[in-house]
Length: 157
Image 1 (spheres, rainbow, N blue to C red):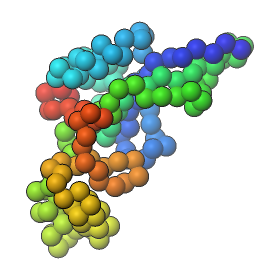
Image 2 (cartoon, rainbow, N blue to C red; image 1 turned 90 degrees about the horizontal axis):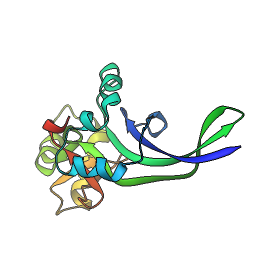
Image 3 (cartoon, rainbow, N blue to C red; image 1 turned 60 degrees about the vertical axis):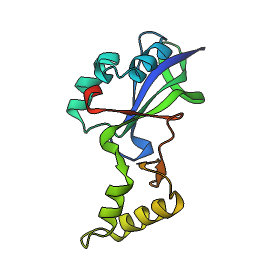
């Protein structure tokens, strides 16, 4: 049995954490890829095989680089959850962010779902100084911390 740490690009097209898709990277230059994105490079130039996959699916909700252990048992490869770790920032497209003004406006709509209204009110009162939010994995709106989250602009997608 052979175990190797393999670099992956992980992305999600829904807010369901059980629906994460992964692309095995050909090289372990994650730091360089992250720097290109920090410098406003295009995501599909950094991960070319992503473009085909995303066009067949829905738009990306969130993505990240990660390293996972890959186990080779008699020629069959399995990806292990043991030893997993995210590398760098969580990456979020601009269309997955919501400004305070948008939340204020949406929470007052008559047609809004009560659950959404509750989420907006909770975020607005819990984080009174926050200007922009994203939805996290447990379906709550959280502030964007630029040290932990990279928001891609429309030119990067």
